[in-house]
Image 1 (cartoon, rainbow, N blue to C red):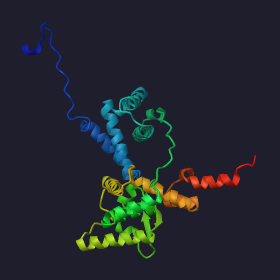
Image 2: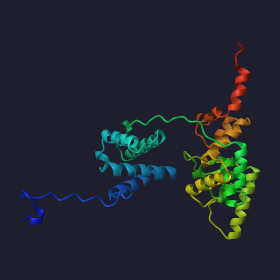
Image 3: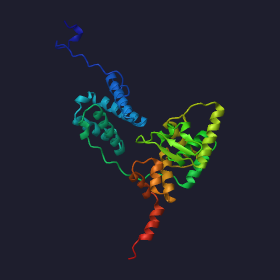
Image 4: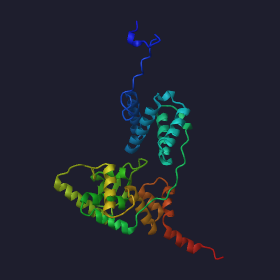
Length: 304
């Protein structure tokens, strides 16, 4: 028999409120956590990059916490509703939405479901890369001259064109000191490549490693820091240098590619240096080199 407290005024048995799930959006139910962990293990087994594993795991966790249903019950309408929510409520950019759709497609395919294959990803906007001028770069190097670590980080980003993740995963043994070569292991697309260490970058690394040795630092990583720290180093250096624009590590990569192209470097070598899978990706820098565009136009313009 129901207890008196179970009845409402009409005498009917009152419904007990549904228990709230333990944790909030950042702490989803165990079933979600377990599924995301399995998904990330599958990605690791496919030898996806650590950045992709982390990013796709976050996409999966966020969606499953929103949908509150297992993968086999998710419909295309659920996915389209989630995409609409991200655009209208979360104000996702086209780039963020594109990455999310890619991550969701990968999630469902990994567990044998094809429903997300019908979810259309937006076309990503093609924006010209932002870069620094030579005078700004001189000021940036001056701003980190007193810190061997920060000076070495800025030099490697600016002269080797590494991505942040690639820089953070460098090991000291990846440097071939005899040939002044830096081996980039498992870059984007799980590709290895070699980049040349020019003299100033090699000198910056030598100074930094000397300081580390004196301090007894035995960490095998060249820079035992994470992406957030690298972002902070670059941002602080730009502020110290009096550069009003927002400067990011990737901006230094763009700066290198633009400078090389403006000095006549073959675009195929720039492609190899940056680790682009296709030269079409590298060709965006041809639109940045306005002086080369002016010269080409002057040589080829019609004489009406």
